[in-house]
Length: 447
Ligand SMILES: *Cc1c(COP(=O)(O)O)cnc(C)c1O
Image (cartoon, rainbow, N blue to C red; front, side, top):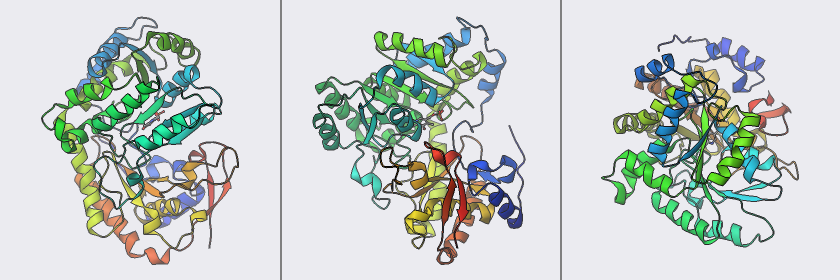
């Protein structure tokens, strides 16, 4: 699929972003030239997937497309039970309705925002146990998504009054900058989980990119195929949730997959209540058919190599110009370190949001803040939570943009970098939702 994009003027963009209350989510897509807001649901489907769309089976119960998807999930992940959902957060909603109770503690490596949202919405606590190296953008570590086992064991053993219903491993770890988790770490987390009798769940949106990094960086797996590595990763897990909009390379969809029949049976009740009957749960038959193929296409080594190379190409252009970017480069996005890019802008004025708006005004590029606005307020004190990093994420859609687009993005970022000293003030919030405020927040520039 090819679409035209409109190269607007700076004057137009200044009008539009003002009208959008300086929230990039409020822009219309035709007001954006290169859209790096997210890699979620924005990938281009293949000829195989489009032909699957045409032959999808829309039966309410027992659809052929459901069976195809079930077979690919069992083949790739080794999970015999599965429930389709309309996207990743719906999978979290259904599964956590079974597993998470008030005051529970759910430790993991930097939970994704909707995962944290679904835990905290149930008055439970998401505790981040990622290794410290994840929070220093200048440190080169091959697996910055890894869990710190000491932190994890401390959380489990020092809160005897709180139940730990499961541990979450997010692969790749989005919040820490699209960073992978090693198999060695997964095995260690699994054996700690077994010691305490706690199940391990993998939040699997970018499972294939994680497997690619393992092949590149973990000695033991250098000669393994992507499929073999994925099988090894999921042999450590008891269950998974996934947003199929990422490595599933479809525009909408998600699922829960599990090895335990008991939990599956309990989850079917919530799936029917919130999503739909168990053989479609929020997805059209044609979308399940496209996903059944997309999961396999994501495991293709040449595709993964090309994708990760393109992300790295953008990162390298910026890095060579001196722009502070998270390293090593992640699998789906480049992350700008706003605290180093705009050191004059006070934390209370949201430096990462300020930088994201500057990039838009400069060249019509839409990225997203991963910083204080996204971190939400502390649910108890309602004070701003200041995360260790203030990042602007530039996420690259799958199979959509060329290297020329990447050169354009880098040139724009370099222009902002060259005039960074002039940017000293940020924004204040004029309106916000009580949870996941970044989607709908309204802002006003300070001067
Ligand atoms: C995208 C994502 C989710 C949520 O999925 P949606 O499809 O956006 O609802 C959960 N976890 C991770 C790691 C994700 O990347």
